[in-house]
Amino acid sequence: MESSERIIKELASKINELKSLYITEKVKVDFLTKELTETKNELLKTNLANEKLENDYKTLKLAKSFAPESEDKHQAKLKINQIVREIDKCIALLNK
Image 1: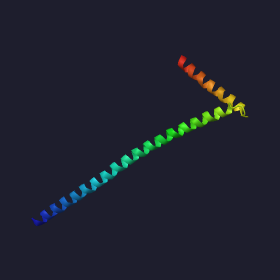
Image 2: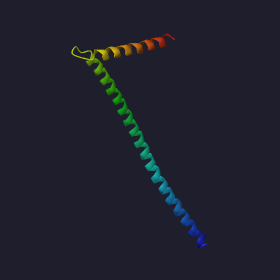
Image 3: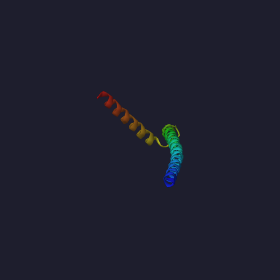
């Protein structure tokens, strides 16, 4: 009878240990999940900022090409033609 009680106590002790390990690991997983979400949000913000900077750079480059002292008039004309083509495509899509 004592061996049965000892086995039950050992089993209960191991179950409690497993519960404790489970809780510890669950806390770690929750923390890592939160950290991953925050990192994804930071990456998204960084990507958006990068896109904005790229657009600003393109705008500045285009504006600079229109400057009177600019030697790159050909590039400006090509860019304008590209923009006009994109606008024409948009109009064609709207007309469908």
